[in-house]
Length: 329
Image (cartoon, rainbow, N blue to C red; front, side, top):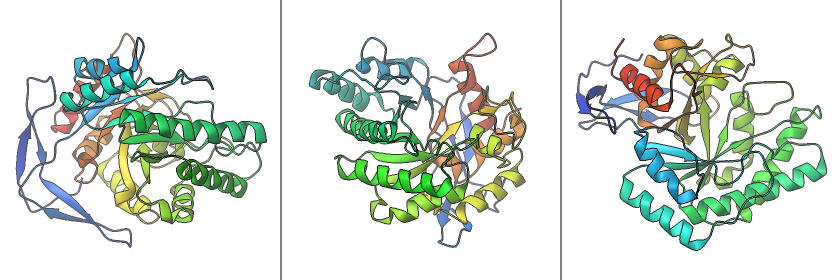
C-alpha cells in the first residue's frame, strides 16, 4: 500500500452494517505519463460496494433487492444474459425503476451486456447481431438511467489480434453513434483465454485511442479475477502498485470507472476465469486489503460477482470486503 505522511481518516459506515470503519483520506491526481500522484484532502470518500442482483419478476425489483443485500451500488442484466432476445422495457417499468433508484441513495446502478454477443467475431452474422445487441442495450440503459454498461470484448476466433481490434473498434463506433443518452460504456478486461480480446492493457488502450472522440462515453472496468488470471499480480501492496503503474502507462487513470471485485481460483497467469469468494482464492486477503485501502481504487465503485454456495452468500462477501477495507484481519 502507498504510504503517506498525512494521517487524516474519516469514519464511514457500510450500508446495513452496524460497525463503522476507517479509510484513509487520500486522493489521487493523475498525470499523463502514467505516474500516480497522491494528495491529501480534508474530506473522506465513501467506499461503495455492491453485487449483481436479479431482475426476476420485473426490473423495478432490482433496487429493493440491492438494498436488502446491503449494497451501496449494484449491477444488473437488463435482459436475458444467455439469449439474443429480450423483453421490451415498458415506460411504466422504467419510471418505477428510476423512482426507486433516486430515492434509494444507491449509486451507481450498472448494466452488464449479455454473454452471447461477440464484438470481435469473425463470423459476420454473429458480429452483426452483436453490434445490434450492444446498440439496443445502450438504449435500455438510457431508459433506466444507468450510469454504466459493462461489455466484454469477445474473441477473434483465430482471425488474429489486429482483426479483433478492428472489429471491436467498428462495433463500438457504430453502437455509440446509433445510441443516445449519458450511459458510459465500460470495456472489461478478460482473463486471457485462447483468442480472447482485452486481456492486456495494451488491447484496451488501442481501442480507447482509436475512439478518442468518444472519451466521455467510453471507460474501463477492471475485473480483479481476470487481472490475476491474465498474469497481473494483485497479491500484495507492492504487486498491486506495479500493476497499476503498468495500467497507467497505457491508459489514463481517470478512464478507470469501476472495479469488479472477485477472487480467483486459478494461480497467477493461468488464464482460468473462475471467480472465488473474497480472500479465499489465489489473490487472498492481503491482496484484497491492498485493493480496498488503495487511495486510488477505494474511490471507485466495486461490484462483487462472487459465487453463492454453502460457504458464503453475497452478504457474507460484502462483509468480508468491508472488514478488509477497514484493515481488519
